[in-house]
Amino acid sequence: MPRGTGASFVMGRVVTAQPPATAYLALGSNLGDRLAWMKHAVQLLGADPAVCILQVSSLYETSPVGGPPGQGPYLNAVLAVSTTLPPRALLQLGHQIEDRLG
Image 1 (tube, one colour):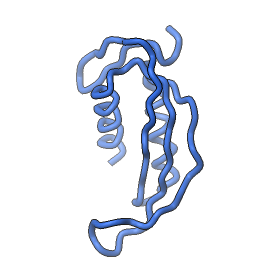
Image 2 (cartoon, one colour):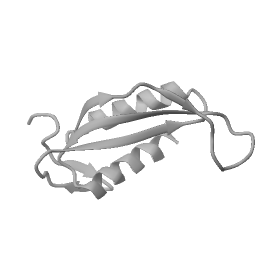
Image 3 (cartoon, one colour):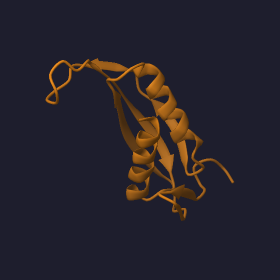
Image 4 (cartoon, helix red, strand yellow):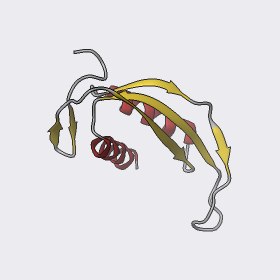
């Protein structure tokens, strides 16, 4: 099965494929080795059979807005992906990866 066209296992259940669509995902980290966390998140997203990474933006460092005082700057990027997952399932996959990475 070609990448980006299969079903996926999200939140403990199989999500059936739909026609591929392009989606854009924002990533950000301000804890620990930010670059390593971002790379790992991209690898985990790309490992899903229903997601194909099309492009990764440059990395941008931004100041935190709101939240607790004293937090460090964020490292941010945007991914373009081709996916057969419905939007909510893609969001759930992102949450699963975020939970896995801490």
